[in-house]
Length: 385
Image (tube, rainbow, N blue to C red; front, side, top):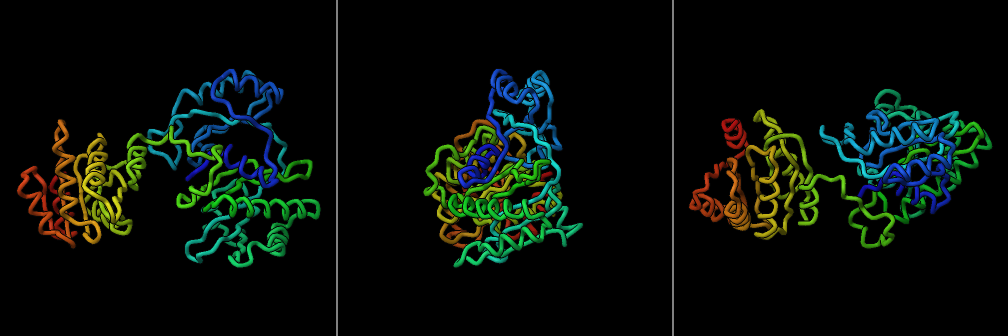
């Protein structure tokens, strides 16, 4: 679960990590009041669940109250599109207004789960303010990594190692050791999968401060995280993603025209590869999971058919715990309830009750294209273009 920047900073403040003074605003009157408290010299930041805000006009430094209000009005009345959103962008509901700081150097710091190592790692770099992927590709020697032993936790000597590797002076060195220890504690106590501070600034007064922050909490640990101030904000999510989440479905909206319905993340990736090989593009990632019932499958199909960009549907099921006949009945329930024209549906079924599922769809005579393998599926999708 992604947090907004202001939520991530509130999380960090609980662990004595310094962040800029700032307040949240949802209208121009609030923006004006907050900007006045900083004598107009402030930073106006959109609060969205996506990176790349600065490059898309979502972060502006201003010097007067009038400029703050003008910038805020522009931000609150248009969508912000970044490389992590759709081309339509997302609406801006709130702004974070922060004090402007005199920054002399920018660092990078993050704590995250390394899926390859199956451990938590602490990463840092002197190349703050840049995309860490770009640094990793162009200047990999500038990235510092400390692997955390899960039995010992992040040790003081590791914090000192990172500080030394960043070539920090003695005054900043001690601040950094305390700060990175606080970030790690926040990561563990709030069941995070990522905390990233970029940039972590050294000010002209030789103080460290987290100018920007993002945090992600593990969905499977949300039952332990009861603090309502860290609740997920779904107002910027596409309506279909919200419907899917409320139905217990794993769904991500994409920009293509082939709606994909599968059971299993690996099969989903293979299904999207087949779609691309057919000269088409996926409209979504949708995994109904292994334990879906007829209602859940019907909800999934309805979500696909509700997307105006979907021109055809590819259902790719390997029946195990989820039986193919259950999927077939879910498809029929969803299509029977719709008044709008139904796009072509290509179905590949293998595994438990596959023949029964294929028979149900064939006898329903709703124009489903039954295929046996990926090659036939790709050819069929291509022929429907």
